[in-house]
Image 1 (cartoon, rainbow, N blue to C red):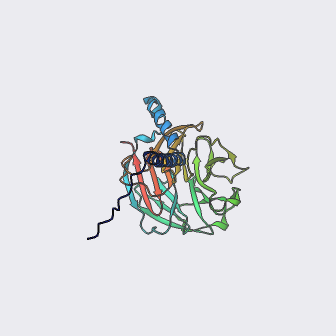
Image 2 (cartoon, rainbow, N blue to C red; image 1 turned 30 degrees about the horizontal axis):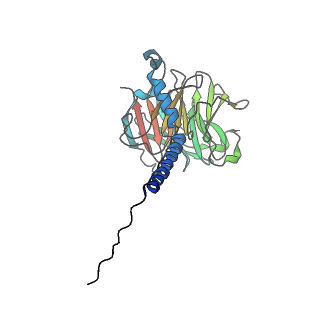
Image 3 (cartoon, rainbow, N blue to C red; image 1 turned 90 degrees about the vertical axis):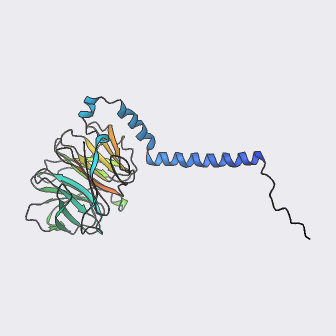
Length: 308
């Protein structure tokens, strides 16, 4: 009868085992460091600590994003499943919202509950990514692929808009392909447009009264506090004058004060601020004159946040 062979392996020497564990721990540490740096979690942690020292008076003087809770969560915009919602702006004149669709260019008007009122085709636009409501029915539209800004006039009877009917304003940086200017917001308090470059995130202003054609050229704003992977959209709070900066890649909304300093932030991950699931790709943000927050996410999801 044959004796069965011993197939067991000799024990791994302790020194070799320690080397394996050391290599594994170093790899984990490197991956963790890269992830923290890419997501700017170190900056978020510092801001979270700073938020804890803000007084109640200072919080009341700001938007204070940590207090917001979702009350409309991932509501689909009907008939826009293939259109890619790209930005959002509040109109105090009509008390409605306007959003642009980038894949099949059109401007849509929504109620504050996220219901679609009308769709206005944008004839001649290539990839509209930013929208801002100015004064007297004027609306600014940023085309990311054409690297320009067009201000149109919209009223209750508008059914279509033709790019050729309006002057365009060159934003420059035409060598960046489809990663150029994306965010835009109207700052009525300071009579200026704020324009955002997607990657790396940068801010510019363009002075205007919101009615007349733009004069001069855009001017850079301080960008030191934009600890974000990209810039997707902008909005200005008409009550405080603070700027909201949205980043889809960072799943984050950031509040900056009039000096450009970070004040507060809100993560857009599931489980935070009442969200059931993470906002898939937040591409538009707007704040109304009552302080209510609205988001649109690709492809066609609508969100609303309020303070309790």
